[in-house]
Length: 345
Figure 1 (cartoon, rainbow, N blue to C red):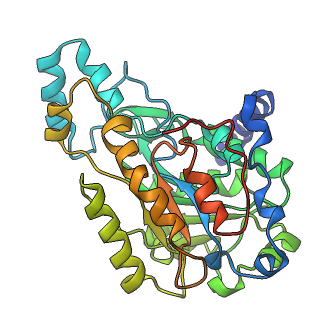
Figure 2 (cartoon, rainbow, N blue to C red):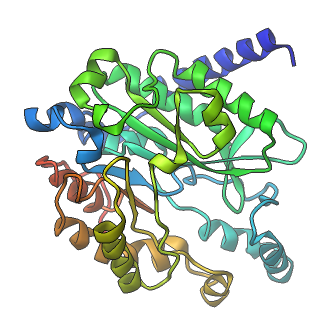
């Protein structure tokens, strides 16, 4: 495709998504945590982002998935899930959808609720050159999600976001280049280039309008573009368990033994279902069997911690709308949050 035409298409998609964002109704979320970074203490405004507690969402874009469309063929579970669909008939897609959906809030709603770290997955559908959110099914287009984030930042001039592009499906080197070009275009003028983490001081980033950190887990892309942060600078150990107590033990061990001081750090408060978990709970959901049990232990665990280079940095959870998760994280920064608009466990 001609590069000028592609750039025109990218800007057109960006403008459309910004228009959609500006027309979006936040409902009750409009009075929650839209500008919490601007309310941080002077001490934290003079600290690096690695010393602040940042609420994040797991599989951030999987709030809507197209259950009428194809499965993501690059997922390792796809064969087993296909077998499940054959056995369960037209009910199968509802089952897979309920076990794939990880969030209730869309991206603007997550931003309004206070989320500032986004766990980004990117994939290509067969015979389609658009980038999509992939889970077991495919979700929305990446360009729409990131344009919504850019639009939010234009309206909230002291908010900073971390976008962690950490899973790529069916992407070749030329696809990475195309995606990075779109990111550079949409976030033009807002990007914080790769630097020592102790330089990511809020006051300095605000003064330079560097309010988007793009973590990208592809070494070649990072080597070619210094506006990308290598994935190694935001380790995110995965508990890989269905047992909430084991999850907490894992989080404690890694925070105490493994948090490096020269990079960001993610604590994953998530439970991971296996295919057998899904088969045993066909009419249940990831929200019921994973998110709620995880949050029951994650929220008090967060409350027992502190901030600083040996404490909490980024946390992630499924279904971040549950009413105590975001307030628990932000309270570590000394922020009292509105919780009226967010659902209870």
